[in-house]
Length: 172
Image 1 (tube, helix red, strand yellow):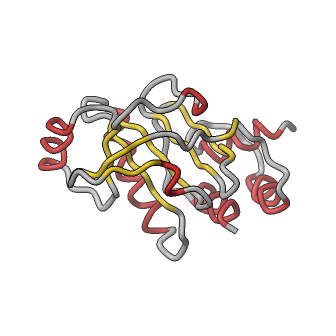
Image 2: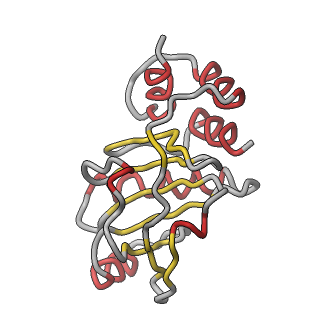
C-alpha cells in the first residue's frame, strides 16, 4: 500500500480509509514517509496583539498549521478538535499556529463568541504557494526538517488517537 494512502488514514479518521496507522507511525519514526513538499518559511503572520513573526522563527520545530476563517463553517466545526489535540500534545514541543485568512475585525468578533485555548494569528501576507493551499480549512504538519508531512484540505477530526500518535512520531 502506498505511503500517501497510509498518511491519508492518519489525516483522516477524517475520512474513512482503513489502513493500519501503526505502520505509518513506524514509517515516521524511521524517516520513511510521504513528503508533500518543503515548507517555505518566508511567510509573515501576526498575533492579535500586533506582534509579527516570520515563519522562519519556528524553523526546526514540529508545526501544526491550520488556515481558517470565521465565515467558514467547516473551519469552526473542526476548531474544538484542534484545541483538544493541542491539549493531548501539551507534553511535547509541537507548535500550533492557527492562522486566520481574513482581517482582524471579523476574527475578534468571532473570538468574542467562541473562546479557544489556541494561539490565533492573522496572515500579514498570503501563504506561500509551496504549501499547496486550495481552500479553507487546510491544515499541515511540518517536521523539524521543514518537510510538509501532512496536508489536509477540508474539515477533519483532529483529536483522535491516530492523529496524536502520528504527531508524536513526527515530534521524536
